[in-house]
Image (cartoon, rainbow, N blue to C red; front, top):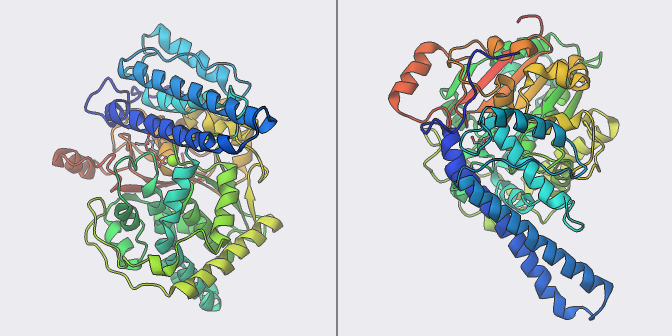
Length: 501
Ligand code: F6P
Ligand code: MG
C-alpha cells in the first residue's frame, strides 16, 4: 500500500519530528547514559568488599567495563545525531528485526534519506530503540538490562493517588453489580468513564516526560468524574457510542475476546487492567482479554513482559506505594498541561483503598491463572526473546501491510471481537505517520487494514499525524497556533468495525 502523502520527517523544521531529533532524543539518550553511570557507580562501590581474584570480582569488573563501552557508544550516537550523520546498520546481535531495519536503511540511503534529520520519523524512532537494544545485547552482562526500568518504576510509584482512587471506584461498582447487569443505560455511563480513564491514562508516557514535574503527573492522572467531563471537550473525534454499540453485539458466552495492543507501563497499564476488568467482570459482552507487550525496551515506557509481571507484584506489595502519611498534597494541585477547569477531589480513605486495590489485583491474578486475562507471550518471557508474532510490535512498519508482513499477527487478531490500539505510537503506525489532512476518514488512513478486524484507537495526541477530525475543527485549531497535534492535551477515540471499510 502506498499512501498518497509523504511521511513526517525532521526536514520540516516546524514539525514535532524536528523538535524530537533536535531535543527530545538527546535528552532520552542522556538519561540512559546517566542510568548506566549510576549503576556502574554502585558496582564500583561494592568492589572493596570483594575478595581479590574472586569470580565475583571478575564479573563485576567485566560489567563495569561493558557499561563504560555502552556509554561510549551512546555518546557517539548523540554526537552523530546532532551532526545529521547517517544511521548505521544495526549489528547482527542475534535478536529479531536486524535484517528488516537494515534493508529499509539501505533503501533510504539510495534516496539520500538515511541521515538523522532526513529519515522518516517513524522509521528512525523505531530504529533508535532497536539500535540501543543492540548495545546491550552485544555484551555478556547487560543483555537483560532495561535502561528505562527505574524511570518506569519511579513514575508508577508517584501514581499512587490515582491508583487508590480507581481501586475504590471499582470497589463501589461491586455493590452495584446486580443493578448494572439489568440496566444497560447505567452500564453505558460506567463504560464511558472507563474508556475515558483508559484513554487519558495514555497522557503520561515517559518519552514525553522530559520536562514534566511530579505535580504534572498527578494532575494528568486526576481521574474523577468532573475531571473527565472537563476533558471530554478535548476528545476531537469521539466514537465512544459506536464502540459501546459494537461491544453490545459481542456475545460473552461464546468466547468473545478483546485485545489490547499495549502502550506504556505503570499507570497506563493499570488503567488498561481496570478497563479490561470492567469489560469481563461487569459487562456480559466480553469473556477474555489478551494483552500484547513489547519484547525489548521501547519508546522509554512501553510495557515489556517483565514490566507486566512486576506491575501486579508492585500493586500487591504493601511497601511499593508511599504510605498515606506521605500523601499530604491532596487535593491535586493545578498544573500547566491539564485542561481547564481543574478539579478538586475528595481524598480516598487510604487504608480502605489499599484493601480495595488488593482485592481487585487478586481478581486480576485469578483471571490470569484462568486464562480470562492472557499475556500474548509467556509471563516469564525475558527481554529480547524471539517470538514470531510479538516481534512485529517492535518493527518499524505501518500496520497497513500487516497481512503481508506479519500474517500470523493479522490472522490471530482476526478472531478478536475488538482490538484496542493504545497510545500515540500505535496511532502513528495505524496511519503510517504520513501527512494525511486531519479530516481524512480514519478508514482511509488505515489503508488495507480497514475492515480486517474491529479497531479502536485510544490516543492522546503526541505527534503531528491526525486523521478523522472534522475539517472546521482541525482548521480552527491549526489557525489558533496551539500545538494541538502534539501537546498531549487533545485525544482521539477512533473506531472502525470490521464490516465497514
Ligand atoms: O511524540 C512524542 C512521542 O515520544 C513519539 O515519539 C511517540 O509516538 C509517542 O510520543 C510515544 O507515545 P505513546 O507512549 O503514547 O505511544
Ligand atoms: Mg509508549
